[in-house]
Amino acid sequence: MTPGTDMTADRNSGGRRSGDAGDRAARAARRVDESAREAREERRETEKERADRRWTELLQEVRVAQMGIQILLGFLLSVAFTERFTELGPVDRNIYVVTVVLGSAATGTLIAPVALHRFVTGHRMKPQTVEWAARLTVTGLVLLLCTVTCALLLILRVVLDNSMAWWIVGALFMWFVGAWFLLPAWARRVGPRQEEREQRS
Image (tube, rainbow, N blue to C red):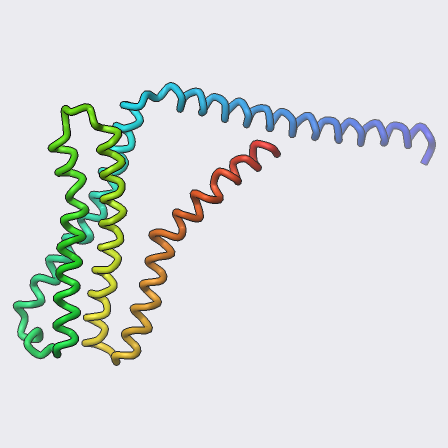
């Protein structure tokens, strides 16, 4: 290869490297601009608008949980009127009572945000109402988790061997805890860090 050819290749490779660096810088600048624009849009959201948005999102979440606990509680209440219920032993009857109590508590807790909103409407307490409703929703989810776990234990103790039922219910309980609580906690912890890394790259 001649010296002229080497110099031409060096210039081409240097041009490609500078072009790639320019593209990366342009992409980074666009991401920064988008982040800044999103931040400006978020800052333009008033406290009342933010409370209204959060309440709408919370209401959709509560509706899903309410539907699940209402179906489960209706099934549990009907069990007491079946012929098979009289064949249950004392332990299974105690599990049933605990399950019904937990299901009733979960239903009341998940309906509480609606009652809270209705009674404080017009008192200019929307942000505080959203915070209280969010805490009630989390409490209702915990009670719903306990209700589902006890209902599974009751059913599996009737269908399967007692020791096998405990193992299956324990595994499902850990799955629910991971999917409902640990995963959101991990996402809240990792999400901001990942966004910062993307902005730096």
